[in-house]
Each structure stands twice: as structure tokens, then as C-alpha cells.
Amino acid sequence: MKILRFDDNRIGVLKDGDRVVDVTDAVASHREKGPQNVIEEIIGEFATYRDEFQGRVSSEAGVPLSDVRLLAPIPRPSKCMAAFANYVDRSDRSRDDLPNEFFYKDTDLLAPEGTVELPDIPPVLVYQPEAELAYVIGKSARNVSQQDAMDHVFGYVPFFDISARGMTRRTTLLSKGQRTFGPCGPWITTKDEVEDPHNLNVRSWVNGELRQDYNTKHMANFIPEQIAWATRFVSLRPGDVVATGTFHVGLGPLNDGDVLEIEIEGLGRARWFAKGYGPRKDMEFTPGITQVPTPEGGMTRVE
View: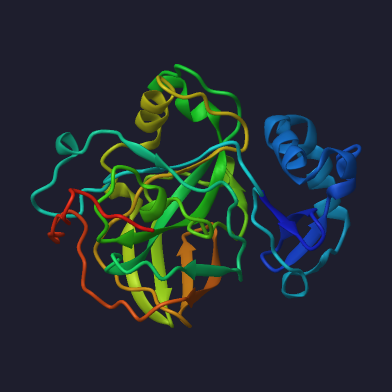
């Protein structure tokens, strides 16, 4: 099942790939609960909603997908995390070389057709969009074993990790965590529709030009390993979003006026627009290889 949010905080299910059936009223007191609580309830109690949703999809025609305005599938999860350097994308890397590690993204996720803002930060050498598979947590997870980890996954969603390259800082707030740096959508695909999340093709485009084209089989740490490691230190709850990292081959700059797209096999395609507030930044930058001069004082200062 593909679950989406649209228009005035409505909940929909995709039907036949191009129609949306409104299932909002299946959730009692949905207006009083608010958008985030509603989607968390659907995710956390999906066993009680599945049949009702499926019945409506079977009996109702729905409206054309082109007639609705998609919202972020999850408006504001309690956590949005992204894996750091989690792909074997170079000959000098192996799975043993890439330990589990994560950083936080801003939790106000950016809906399809939204605007990625690129602030004028002089030390930034280039902005890059990283296309990633993200998974959505389905039930609370703390100290979860690898064997049980997939029981805590609700579904999957395409995700962009927008990155500001070139700064030397002690945190990832500016390089990874700025507002609009987490484009997410178009919808959540429940895990029963995905035979193997570690064998999906991921592609991205900028202005119609293919950038990244890779398969998730190249992950260093697969999803069960990620969940088992992360839940040793943080608690995950229904609706949390975890991006699995990216295959860095094909990365390129993102500038004012660019159109950004992602498509993941079986999970849908979505588009965003970039708005820059400073000069173009077109430097070729390969994470982990490009050397950044250490500024005076040992770190980049942004006033």
C-alpha cells in the first residue's frame, strides 16, 4: 500500500498508480489530533487500519493524482536521521571499513514540489543533493537485535540528503541539518510491497540530466544492522525516518533555478526546485577525497 498526505492534511492511498482515495475519515478525531499524530497513529496501529483502507480503495474511484497537492508523507517526525558514508562506492572501501554512524536532519521534511533553499554561506564550496532510500519506523525500538529489526520497519520513502560541502565544523548543523535539506516523498510504500530493500535501483536528476544511478545492494551496513546499532543509543518511534546513505558516484552541484528529481524502483518519483541566495557554486567535490583547507582557528566560522 502507498500512503500519502495531500491538500489540507488529508490522508490518501494511491490506487492504480495514478489516483488517490481519501481515507482521512477512517481516523477518529483526525482534526483534533493534528497531522503528525494522525500519521503516527496510522503507522503505529496499521493492523487496525489496513482493511478499512483497502476496502475504500476497492470501492471508491478516487481522484486523479495530478489534481492533488502532495505534502511531506510525514510532516514532522520525532527524529530524522541519515547514515554517514554507508556505501561501498570506491575500490578503496569495503564493508569492514565503513562502521555504522548517523547524523540528524531537520525534522520539518520538505514536501514534493517544494523549494530547497541554498543560503549564501561563503565558506560553502558547493551544494550537493544525495539521493537515498529511507525507511520509516513502524513501532518503538530500543536495543533491538538484528534478527528482530525488520519487524520495526513500516515502509520506505525516497529521500534527498542536501549537503553543503567545504566547511570545517564540529557539527553537521550547517552542512546537513538546515531547513529544507530533507526533501522527502512522494509517499510511504509499506514494506510488504518491497521484496528486498537491499536490491532497489535509485536514480536522481538535475534539470533532466541523470546524476546518480545505483543499487541499494552496495550498502555497507544493511537496514537490520543500522537499526540494531542505532537503537543501542537512541530510541526510535513510529513515524521516525532513517535515510540509509548514498552511493557518491554521480554527485554534482545544485544551484539557483535547478530542478531536482528522485526515483526509487517501486517507490515513486518526486520533484523539487532550488532557490539560491548567493553566487553559483559549481566546484567538483568528491566526499572523502576532496581536500578542504583548514581555516585559521581550526574551523569555519559563520557569522
